[in-house]
Image (cartoon, rainbow, N blue to C red; front, side, top):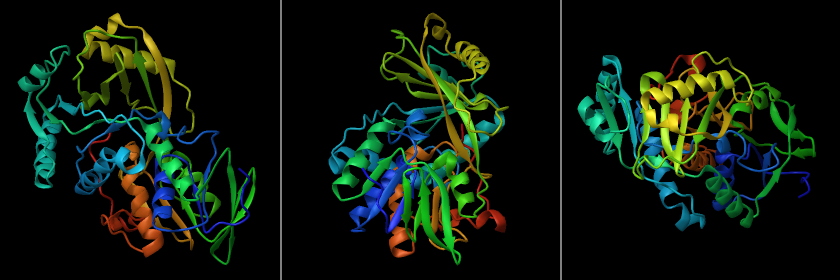
Length: 384
């Protein structure tokens, strides 16, 4: 597809945020929408490299409310969009191995229950009973929600892109943005390797690269890209079909069933900010040793695949929605590792903000760009 000369809005970033926003803007009747993705295929950036987890279990009300709106959108995705996304309700089981985490888990469950989310608080013995293959002698407590699970990220992105294109959205891959031209403090032009597009409105949904895009418009976002990596194992017949998405919270170590094997990941607490998406083989061994310690059967398996992706992390691990100090330059970024699951509703929210000037589905106005300079941070605890 040739790059158009003009657009009513240019959306930068063809992952779940950008794809959802393009779809929901078109659904509302907006015309001349251009969606740009620098990779050759949509959804192959941060979205395509995530673990695919979706959950209601967060430590702040606003993140729980984002899940309450977004996860049902994924549930009915096939009916609305026509694309199966392989939503598997295996449940998330978060395990606390120290008293501080156990205390916070208890408060989190009380808050989630108050909001209508049926998360269960488990004792250490109940955790061990549910995970007989795992060594959790030190488990003090756990939380479990059967509605949590996994979804295929690429199917969500391709579903939104296809539906948006049918409504006239021009979705262009291989379009690398290298400049944004302003005139009198207003957006005027987006410059790419394929040419330039005149526009008065940009939605920056570029995930880990959104800070770089913002700098092109003279906007400084307090966001850093951090590498996270994971690997999958060969088939393990011992892993039951109902094995949950398990998170060893203190170690930021997680497991979930992937095909006939297991997907395993762990956050490197010493990771330095950057855009490197190569696998750190040394840290993978650290991850493997920790995994075997918790799930000994992993020692019998071989590695099937491995990859790394990027989180875009804000100081309070919450996203940024809305306007900036540049007219026409809006942002939807900073999800700190949980963007995929909140992508569907986030695109809808941005369509409301762009067309109506306010968020209707859910009030996320407290997650604005100005909160950082005004000291209104809202800290999320449940980040892996």
